[in-house]
Amino acid sequence: MKKVKVGILGCGNVGKYLIKNLFELRELIKEKEKLDLEVIKVLVRDGKKSRTVDGFKIPQQLLTTSFSEVMNTSPDIVVELIGDVEVSRTFIKRCLEEGKKVVTANKFLLTIDDEIFTNENVFFDASVGGGIPIIRTIEKAVPDEITEITGILNGTTNFILSSMEDGMEFSRALELAQKMGYAEPEPSFDISGLDASQKICLLAAIIFGIRVKPENIIREGISSIEMIDVEFAKEFGYSIKSIATIKKKKKSNAEEKFEIAVYPVLISRDSHLAQTKGNLNAVTIKGRRIGELFLKGEGAGGNPTSISIIADIIEASKGSKRDKRRIFPPDGKLINPEDIYSKFYVRIEVVDKPGVLAKIADSFGKNMVSIESVLQKGRGVGEEKGVPIFIITHETKESNLKKALEICSKLDVVLGAPFFLRIYQE
Ligand SMILES: NC(=O)c1ccc[n+]([C@@H]2O[C@H](COP(=O)([O-])OP(=O)(O)OC[C@H]3O[C@@H](n4cnc5c(N)ncnc54)[C@H](OP(=O)(O)O)[C@@H]3O)[C@@H](O)[C@H]2O)c1
Image (cartoon, rainbow, N blue to C red; front, side, top):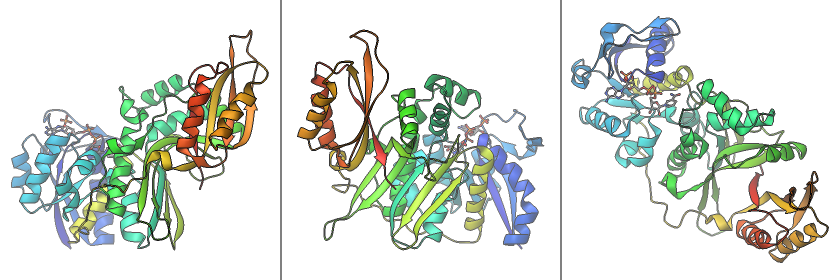
């Protein structure tokens, strides 16, 4: 039986569960994997704090506040679960210099540090999708040409949008997400799509080698979505979901290009992604030959995330190295958002007068945007009060829609800036 000494840096949400689960699963892993995984030291900031998780007390003698003390125990593998970019980077680099294998879940560090990302001794399955083995599946189980990955990669936004679909206003849903521990007290990292953008950029680098920065992809948050959008979507057979997507596009002999984005979309209520409710995450993987795969589960939380980490520890313990990654800059490889074709949902607030629709239809028509369906709801009281018009378009270029909406926004019958969302077609 191979004995493997595991050092752990960090004993917070994930670290605590990792230690508990390594203790609890020790015999099972011995039996199944012929590996004896032993936790030898755990680095923390506060060595005096008593730490218990689901009734399991972390043995105090394992804790240390000294990184050198962890390294002096000669770990075979070091798991980094600190989270802070600079502290984590420093420790990981020191571990690699000393010939250790490293397991980390630090997605932000992986998106910005090429040396760590491309190192064959760094394992990071848990950095995207928490307990869902997204990276492992893509890398180990799908030796096909992947054409698209589209997923719900942020549990907080999914919880808020699912709650809105159940009739709760955005602000109430956010409050509830915070109360239940799904959202941070400062939630903008999730709500703005930044968290999901880091994850999708990491997946883009893993699958296609394209090394794009989160700030250079299309990113839209969910804070402009109103109850009337959710209700309209429902009435027309859609859900609203915040998705992260990478699509590889190649026209005949032309060069490959990529659409990489995080944004809310209308998506058919029958689809697997629309059926992913609450704080769950999910991902659809499309390959030329394999067709479509769908993975769904807990995208965060210490307990499920620690299982992905254990899978990495097992892989690293078996002596395997990760495939050497080749990465290239995105120069010219990203599709200009204006050139992307989609169907769109549009909401325009207008004065309640005859002839309004004709004026809007005219500006759409002049910009090659053809309308699939229109719905006008409610009646404003008095002329000043607006009523919303909802429009679903046929597929069109995003630049055409934007030109049409710019003209619309200047019409005397239109109140405020029109709002639009893309419609995701599977
Ligand atoms: N939470 C999740 O659901 C989840 C899911 C997927 C990936 N991740 C990733 O997993 C990593 C860990 O997340 P987490 O939620 O477990 O973080 P966390 O709860 O904030 O825990 C961080 C741990 O690191 C220790 N620490 C912080 N700075 C330190 C320093 N300078 N020296 C020594 N120890 C230090 C803290 O010690 P003290 O306890 O003494 O303060 C704490 O134990 C992050 O990269 C995160 O992005 C988390």
